[in-house]
Length: 243
Image (cartoon, rainbow, N blue to C red; front, side, top):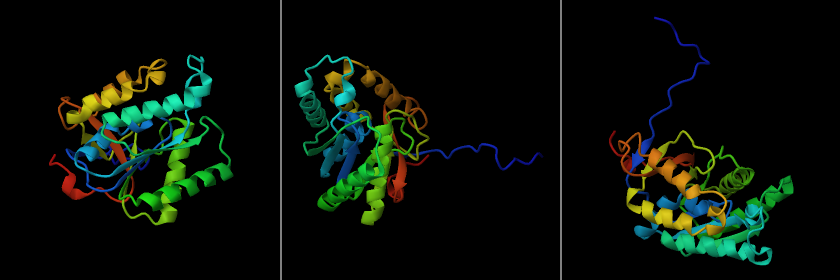
């Protein structure tokens, strides 16, 4: 029998399936107003439904999201904040903070450090046990910057909870799929609240399709799911469904 070469690709592990989310204090970081529902919107709805405290932090103002200038520039940042609040209400969340950093910028080391300090303050103030953030290879510079900022802050804070990375721009090989069938309609409504972005890209269609695809492995293609990678901590064994 031939021996496999060390550099040959290996079969990835089958992701765990969760039909519920862990209980705890939830802090979610979104690079732009809409990522909080486009990525982990279904999971935030599940946390809200089980009574978990949930706070969302939107790091940038999203003002480059109107390249054709279809909306009034003087009120555009506030429009995006209002859409974010409306979308989060659809998933049962009313605690949201906006840092207001400019988006689509090339960040210096001092810019990243400023973000780390903001994240450290947010972690200290809210004391989360569960953190959601963009996964490490999500394909947008602002998402990558948010991942760096939050992970550095978690490490400096000595975070001992669970941090999960979510997908928006790049699909991941996940560690866990969370079934979100029961709250998918809420996620759809939440994404549609961001009309300034739907005017450019029908991302509700794209990410709805991604959620449907995430039902392929464990749910026989019936229903919806959201995928996550374990960024810090470990996945609780008691949530995993038998496979």
